[in-house]
Structure formats: C-alpha cells, structure tokens
Length: 542
Ligand code: N01
Picture 1 (spheres, rainbow, N blue to C red):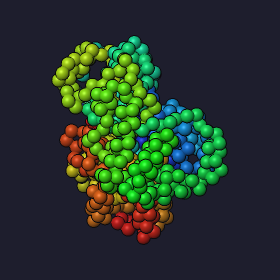
Picture 2 (picture 1 turned 90 degrees about the vertical axis):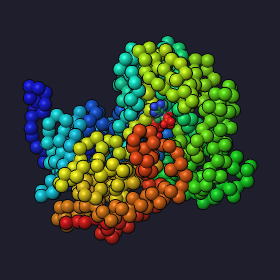
Picture 3 (picture 1 turned 120 degrees about the horizontal axis):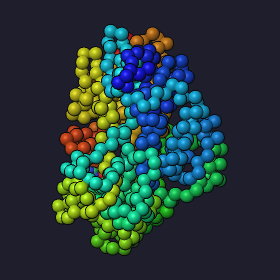
Picture 4 (picture 1 turned 45 degrees about the vertical axis):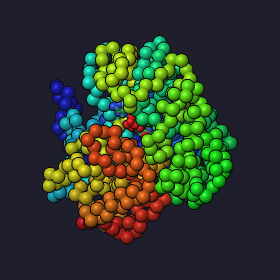
C-alpha cells in the first residue's frame, strides 16, 4: 500500500529470516532456509533477481569460470536438466539460468524486488533485527542474512567536471538494460580490470575511435571460449556430484584442479614453458593459479609465469611501444584478479584503437566534449567507466547496521573489516554474511563458497532453534584470532604486494587491509566444520 507521496505505508512484516540481496547467495539462502521451515523473505534493490548478473550488463560480460563449474551444485536435478550453450557463459545466459532456478524452486513468491534496505537495527530485548526499507516498510526478523555481494557498489571516480559532459557516460556495474550502440562514435574506456578487458574488444568493433585510458596494466589470459563440447558436458553429468565433492577439497572450489604440490623452481625451464603453453592453449585462469605450489608465495616462481605472459603480449601486439605498455610490471601475476579475455590484446592492432597511459599523464577532468589528461584533451561521444567497485565492505557499509547499544558496523569496520570466519561480526548477534570479508569467497568459485556459507548458516540456525537458542553471537576473542589468522595467511603470500581491490587500494581513503582468506576453500571448509562440530566454538549461544 502506498501513500499519496509514494511512500509505502507503515507496516511491519514478521519473519524468521530476512535475507538482504537477491543474487545467487540470497536466492539459495531462501531456498535452503524456507526448506528448513523458517519463514524467510528476500529483499532486493533491483527490479530483477541475479545480483551481479543483473547489474553488470556491459557488452562482453561473461563469467571467467567455466559454467559447468560456475553453477548451483545443491540440486542434481537442476544441474542435470540445465544445458549451458558455451564453455564460459555470457551475462544474459547466466541471468536466464538464475531466473530458471528461481522459477523451478518457486522462489519469487518470497522475493521482494525494488526494495532497498537502508537500516538494520538489532533489538537486544526481543533478539530481533528491525530492518527498514527506503520506502518506509519495517521488517522484524529473528535473523538477518546479508547476501549483499562483494562487488555490488560501483565506483565512478569523482572526476571534476563529469556533470558537464555533453555525451553519455556509463559504468559497467550499472549498465542500462537496453543495448548501447557505439557505432560510429568516439568512445573512451577508463579502466583495464576484468570488466574493461572483457568490454573493450566489443566496443572496439563498433566505435569509430576507441581510446583506452589505462592506469595499470593487468595480466589477462585467453578464455579459449567455444560452444559447449557436448561430450564434455555428458562426462560431467555422468558424475557431477563426485566432481562437486572434489571441488570442496581444492584451493579455488573448482574440480580438476587439486592443490598443487610441485614447486615451479623444481621444474626445468623447458618443463615450465611447456606447462604454461598448454595452460594458455587450454584457456582459463584457474589452471595457471593452481599449477605450482609456490605460485603465490615465491616471487621467483611467480615471475616465471609472469614473464611467459609478457612474452605472449609482445608476440600478439605489433607495436612494441604499445605492447610494452600492456605488459604488467608492478605486481606478481595473480595477486590482482587474473583477467580472462577473448581477443583483448589483439584489438590493439586495430587502427581505431589507441592506448593512453594515464599513469604517466593522469586524468585531470571530464570536459563538456570529452576527457582531459595532463597531456591533452580527448574528444569523446561516450565514456564507459570500468573503474570497479567499493569491494567486499561497500554494500554492507551503505546500510546503517546497528547493534542494540547503538554501535554502528561502519564504525567498527573503520580500520578494516573484523569478522569471525567471514560470516559473523562480534557485537552484532543473529546477523550472518554470505561470503563476507575474512572468507575465501572472492578468491574462489563464488557459487561454491555461497553454498558452503548458506549450508553452514542454515545448519547453525536449525541446530540452535531446535535447542531454543534465541541469540547467536560471535565472541570478540574468537573474532580477533580469526582476523589475525586471515592476516597471517595473507602475509605469507604475495597477495598483499598488489594495489588491488582485495586491499581496498582502488578506493581513496579506504584502509589497506587484505580482506579475503586465502588458505583455500578446502582448508577453510575444514575449519568451519570443526567449529560446528565443537558446538559452534567462538560463539555464545543463549
Ligand atoms: O574493476 P577493477 P573491474 N583513473 O577494480 C582503473 C569481478 N569481475 O570491474 O588498477 C584511471 O578490477 C583501475 O586502475 P588501477 C572480478 O573479480 C568478474 O574490472 O587502480 N583508472 C583498474 O584498471 C574483478 O576483479 C568478471 O590503477 C582508474 C580499473 O579501473 C572485479 O569484478 C568480470 C581510476 C578497475 O578495475 C572488479 O573488476 C568482470 C582512475 N581514477 C568483473 N580508478 C568475471 O568474469 C580506477 N581505475 C566473472
């Protein structure tokens, strides 16, 4: 019901579990928790479900994990009946799949679209979360599951003059639903991370002139995408559940890539090159990241792969100066998200594509007619920002989350996120995060980690509800120990060396803290299972 000014009339919805976010995590949480008898409802800001795959509609958006792996594992019926058209699926294909799953499991009746949660306050007397929506609805729930995503707060840098631009500008993470046609235009793309690298070849095919404004070169590997090999699909489907179980023991949650045991430095140069060449021809990033045991811990070992990829770039890009600019040299390979492309380096051989070094000559302002660097002005009809996200903490910090003593989550996290297992936060009882900071989520096949978290949270809620527990809270000392452990593991690797969104380096003023847990999904699952087996140690249940 709405009032004359459009605000939803005050009403209070009573739930067992409120789930914030209708992406892959929120939808699975709904399915699982509803199945356990909890009255559950999902609140989603978008006009459709799908999360990342709903918002990121930029040209070329595609998954960088093979679809036979990047898909729900909880239902063998679903994975047997679904058929992916390509090895790596496009955004529209994945969104179709998510909607299919939502229909199949009759989820939509408990999903409220176009609803942004703005406040979440814990009422300690009633042990309930009181959520408020942007249009005035109040929701009271025993538990709150934050499935708000890790890359769901797009960031357009606050370039001076952007409001004066006479053309159109876009951000990959809030791309319009209707297709954007760049035919005949002068287009600027700012940003060369995963999104930019996927989008640039598509825009290059349409634009009269494309300027790619690159601040930092990234490593990218070829997807070697192709129509789905039906024999391979049939082989998967003949033992899908075994594969899913195998994925649980790996580093990244993908079957076929066991935790490596051989050092790159124990292989001969010829052996290494042959392996890297095979992986390059096979396509994908997981093979590279799982090829040697010291890929992420030894700079010398890592450099063998980095040098191989630089050689490939030089062999593809004809202009040696452009090739050199595209060769990453400021971070070990893989310590920023390794990109996956189709024809990325090749497009720099097209006469209508120019690479602009905005490390040497930074962007100063957006002008009415284009973009000005310290060197010159570029006249543009459209600008596409592929400048990333306020990752991992942005979406949760946008909600005013408060404990019953008024403490605010954003304040607690001012120096970086503090969590227990990446799932709970001390001082914020009955609230759970799906793939939160301090978990391996973003360093794994996301759906694998989503399912593991939702299953773990669901078991916890079921077990404790059966025992009449009304309040579940992570202990501060357990949280401290977990944060220290996450840091210790990261510090033993090369990851912190890169200025990546994993450390918040892309957001000015964000504290530099390495946020994901990088011991691998197998090791992490073991810890979570042990915590549960020991009566949810580290938590107070009352
Ligand atoms: O964002 P990014 P993304 N001036 O932060 C540049 C996932 N994803 O959207 O490196 C000039 O990686 C910035 O430069 P620098 C995936 O996990 C997955 O591409 O900070 N440049 C960088 O080049 C990925 O990692 C898929 O120096 C500026 C770029 O913008 C994550 O999403 C596909 C700038 C931002 O790169 C984020 O990727 C796409 C400025 N002021 C994305 N500010 C899959 O395939 C920023 N930049 C599943």
